[in-house]
Amino acid sequence: MPVYALGDRVPEIHPTAYVHPDAVLIGSVVLGEEASVWPGAVLRADDNTIRIGARTSVQDGCVLHCTFHLETVVGEECVIGHLVHLEGCTIEDRSLVGNGSIVLHEAVVRTGALVGSNAVVTNGMEVPSGAMALGVPAKIRENAVDPMHIAGAMWSYLERARHYRSGLRRID
Image (cartoon, rainbow, N blue to C red; front, side, top):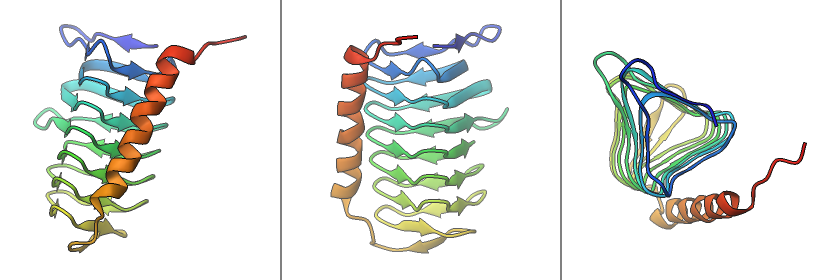
């Protein structure tokens, strides 16, 4: 797997985290216990830090950046779907960011919230706990999230990472 230091910025990967060989980590990336990063994902922390909490999945094709002034922080037990772009934002614990979504600078997705597929959460926007953010730009739908939906997706990727850690092998 391509893991790069950039000057004194060095990734910190928990020993139980899974990083697919085709994912790229650069700079100050911190992966928590049993976090997973999937094929084609790029986590580039050259100006600040990207923090990924325990048991969180960053799925295929995601792009995570930070800015000089803003970390990108993803809490514990989150699901970051395929092709998501996160930059300078905070995703709190047990939240889900759906496939193709974008969450921008200083936005906060509160605990247990959901960003729908292909939604755009604009600069400084807050998605309240238990709410859905849907559309472009995202509009809030209060009290719309079933926490079991997020938990089921999180557990699915936790088990998948365990299987890949022990069973993935290149055959070419």
